Image (cartoon, rainbow, N blue to C red):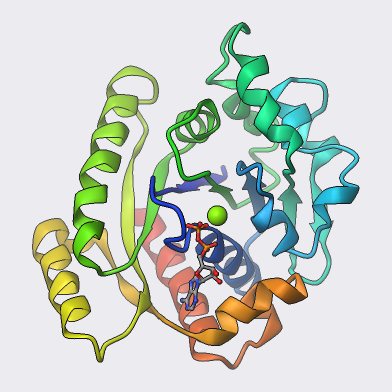
Length: 256
Ligand code: ADP
Ligand code: MG
């Protein structure tokens, strides 16, 4: 059975997409069968996995509107070692088109049931909003991985996300929980970041992943080559951290 995780945070630019593509590549590297689902119309996770969003014949849009299956629409990225259900600007229209349809928030869940035995992990890159798209991700998932920067306002943003997850848990998806908080773009030289990191640990305990992702320029450069950092430069500190994170996640699965 595939473990399905959303990578979500209502803030933009916090490292959701970077975390999704690098975790996918890290998991693939340690032998896991991975499907990455891009739920953001920007298509950054698609491009960052070596799949050209402008050339997609079928995408997650077609899957949500039930005009294609995941088997038909997902593409295997040879370079990255995982499957990609891609997105592009067309997906922005799905928001409106889904409004009048039945089970509009359960479309992704239904589509994923068919491929449950084909993958060990499904990672869903969410857009930075609580839209019908994000809701489809949260309804399909067993849990949420929350990337966050250790900055002052990060904690405030977390309250909204935690409340959203509680609501979805209570009303739509009883399986849903926070899998863990991933500290990203971390710079240990900045005192405030250390302080926020400590606050996070005292507040959320073992819901904070042990692995910390450092701020690392190679991770930021990799998308312009259409690759996750883990593939683009495996020796970079940030890439190594993501492989460590993949191993930590695999180890945690039995305890979830
Ligand atoms: P989101 O998907 O939440 O909007 P992104 O993953 O696109 O965020 O990251 C925002 C920006 O920060 C991007 O330019 C990305 O390359 C950069 N970035 C993300 N993680 C790191 C990191 N660990 N070190 C350096 N830059 C990073
Ligand atoms: Mg993104």
